[in-house]
Length: 400
Image (cartoon, rainbow, N blue to C red):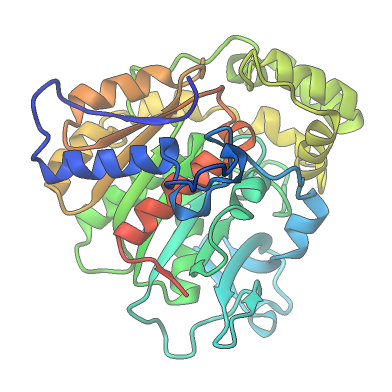
């Protein structure tokens, strides 16, 4: 396969259906090349949305954003997990029950310059539509680094949330990691930043946090932030469709997982070996040592490799809460009020059955298929960025 495609959700003649036309538009972004003048080399072409092409196929620039560079673009904020609130320095003074969490906000100033500082909207929120990016397990927000640099500079504002236990957020011992507490943290960022409306993109396990947030939106209509569109990629959506390889989360959540975590903290080589054995990449992808080292660097910050073991119980948690975190049931209740797009990879051994199930269980959802393995954030960042850009623009995220 030479690019990602959008697969129609129903086998019918729907060429006049507006939804079908949207699917065709997305496919053209990923496959099409603008008309070239005679003699123009194919590697000079560009697909729509500025995706660079080589021989007609989107490619990523050979530039690796390091973990240090990624985390330098955001900041750590005080967080009260019991109250689910972000606090200012003066509010946090003297408190011993708080954590610090990492977040990254990208805005474009009036003069066109890009700013990455986290700041509260002085007007307490506006009608602008945000793009919220929720990360995967176990790499955290750093997993978005290569995708972020390929998104249009002015697309946003964008918010990258780092869950407790990952990246540059704190890793408290004995912390009760859960989907609910991750959803609480996302909502706290939205409240702090005055986010009223947002498009949400999830990769891997934070699809569950999004399902929880959509449930809350149904239960508390008109309160807080409104999710207008959701794009869920390689994540759990139905409790009966997980297929994680044994060397992945099943191993990590077992008693042996604690040993794996300790070895990973101590050695980038051990981590890299385990990461490849967990089938995170497609067979044809030649992951570089630099990519593995930077992922390891992001993971082990603040003794973070423990999260490999301590945070690996989300599949079991999903099954316990299957009635609440089921995309089909949520979609029926939403009744078209939130645009839903489900994405997956052709060689993903973890959640490929989730994508197939969505085609039949949620027929109104768009289905986007990418070539490659589970970590399309690494393997296909240009394609991923193109689809994110298309969905974000379609649902009101502006490009300044």
